[in-house]
Length: 158
Image 1 (cartoon, rainbow, N blue to C red):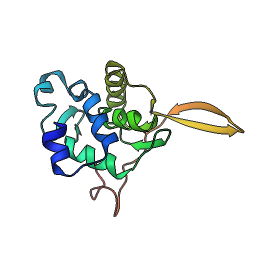
Image 2: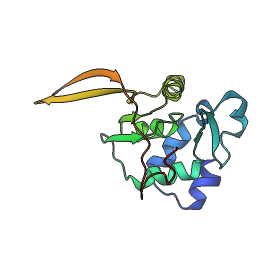
Image 3: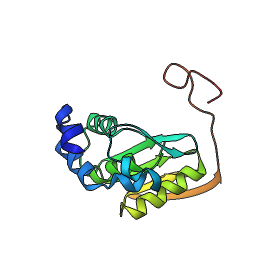
């Protein structure tokens, strides 16, 4: 997948290429689609959501120009695959997922792949910094309306 679909199409960031070689993509798709996991097209993951095609994931990740030790906020966890790559490169990922079933499956996928450094949020949290110490408080579950407008969905019913 990496050499045929990604490197050959101009993705040169070695950190991205290595992460994509190390993270087993088939663990982030439904079992009946494992044979298609490494093909360059999106796949359904349930709840009307998809895992993006590998080339697009590689391109988005490369554009971030991440370094070890960076922290990343990801909006829309999906299967957890992108978060896994981000964690491999940067080290720390906070990922927000609005669909509880999708968030739970992503956590399961990340555990199965042995990925650490990803925290998926379904609840309202407050993180307060006191010097070098961070205090995290978790509150009730929340759900927000979809992002709409010029940079969001055009259909408010999404």
